[in-house]
Length: 315
Image (cartoon, rainbow, N blue to C red; front, side, top):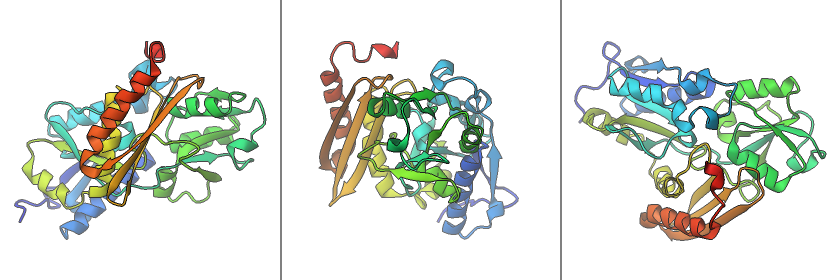
């Protein structure tokens, strides 16, 4: 029995970014916690925190600091006691958390695939030579240039709604979004085609929501256990170990996906040069318990295969 469950008078504070998708994820977390403990929604307060990554949208992430720009202010507020938990899109999360914080709770994973978005054509193959495609993802840019070097790629920063607006304004003919975000926002009206993972391997942890907490907060740790999705945690352990061993960031085009098959984990990974001129991929199958170790080992193998010069672009 958990002591001191939150109440409307003494709510648990949930920190989040302010985009519609981030808010949808925070509301999903609140709903799951409320139902798990038979509490009113008013026992949880959603606190919107604007991050540096949200404020600066006119430059590529690699120029202003990478993934941590979407988490720094949120984590500072949690360490200061202003919020109790933080809800994150896991594909935006660095592989290491600040001292005193831990990320060990995941909600059931959504569709992991990327979506091809265009108001006029149905697929990547339908785009004419020289067509402009917008994306802020270095991974998607590299994968696109690998498969369609004839296309022009332009920077496309901003939240999901901002990018759709840029598409309508003709800044680009097509773009990519995560199927998970479109599904969570019930955006059935968006002209999209899901891209199978054999064609475009997704970002590590794409489609997963993670909940971060203070390491010494036993009450919150016990509450979060009630909503943690074990299979998602098992898959992300392998994927994030692979990413960590590659020193992955927004400056490294890395893709990875683990799936559970007959009690084992099947992990696939891909690393590319930013210009899409070369890619290295690999896959491994192992027990669930060995997922993290296998992810790190696969990364080491790919680094050795890359050889001297492949990663010079890390700069």
